[in-house]
Amino acid sequence: MAPVIVDAGPIYAFLDRNEKHYDWVCAQFRQIRGPLLTCDAALSEVCYLLQRSRSEIVGLREILRRKVILSGFGSTHGLDRALELMATYRDIPMSLADACLVGMIEQNPGSVLLTLDRDFTIYRQQGRRLIPLIAPF
Image (cartoon, rainbow, N blue to C red; front, side, top):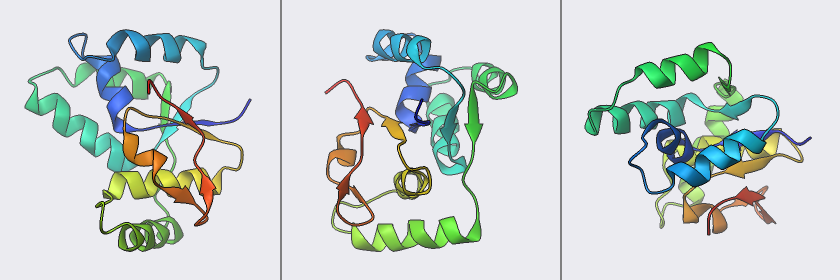
């Protein structure tokens, strides 16, 4: 099975029962085999959202401890590519987390991205190829 890379939105929705896409995200998490991959920048966004909504960070800590989600992006090469992508998509603009996730897609051929963010319909991997998505839209 292809690696599944997960954006901040679905992680946050999984941890907040009041989030609009909670049920959809829970159904996706049940169907996916193996750990989900993400980047530290997306985890930073999740932490910010959890603190802003006054939600508990305990749930995030638990899914990381149990290795349901693994952070797998942080190399110097990866960061350089992320900054290059941010420059390319400066008119949107592209966040660091989104750029890192596109970099992860490029580094993991055959992978798909679990997201709630429509911007990933605009972004391309290696400049031309669509990013395969699992999304509610």
